[in-house]
View 1 (cartoon, rainbow, N blue to C red):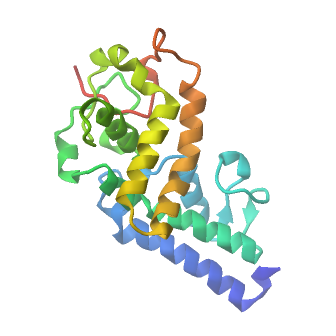
View 2 (cartoon, helix red, strand yellow; view 1 turned 90 degrees about the vertical axis):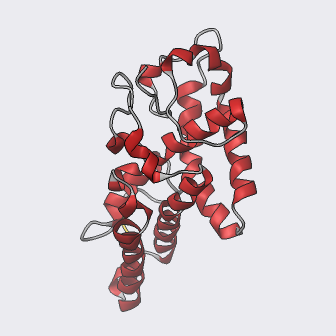
Length: 221
C-alpha cells in the first residue's frame, strides 16, 4: 500500500498543497464566492482532497474513472488526484476564456426567481455557458446575465451539441499549451454530460423553464 511509504505520504501532501494554493492565493481566492465557484463534481472533489486524510470521489460523481470512493492508496490514485487538482486549477483559464472582468460582478442584478440569485451561487459553468450562449447571438464572448423574457426566442441556441462545439472551439483557439487545454477540458467534460442530460429532452417548441436551469445567469427583468 502506498500510504505505508514515506514517498506515498509526500506525494499526497504535494497534491493537497497544490489545491490549497489555488484556493488561498489563486483565482478562487480572488472570486467573491470563493470555492463555491466550483461546479460539481469538482466542489466535492476539493472537499474530499482537503480533508485531514485526503480521499478521492466515487466514479458515479462523473470525475475520473477509477476505484470506489476512498483513501488514496496507490500511485494511480495519486495520479488521479493530481489530475483533479489540475482541472480545478484550470478554472482560472476558463475565466480568461470568458473575457471575465471580476469587477463587473458587483454590478449584476441577478434574477431572484432563477437558480442563481447571488454572486455566491455563480459557478464556472454558469459563466462559460452564459458567455457561449451570448456568442451565438453577437459573436463575442461576454459574461453578462441574460434577459429571461427573451429566453424562449433563443431556445434553438440551447442545443447541447451546439454549445459544446462553441465551447470546445473557444478552448482550442484560446489555450496555447496542450497541458492547459487538457486540464480545461477535464473540468468541462462532466459539465457537458450533465448539461446534455438536463437539456437534451427539450425542444425549440418546448424550452426549459429559465427558473429551473443553473447553467445560465439571468438579470432581473
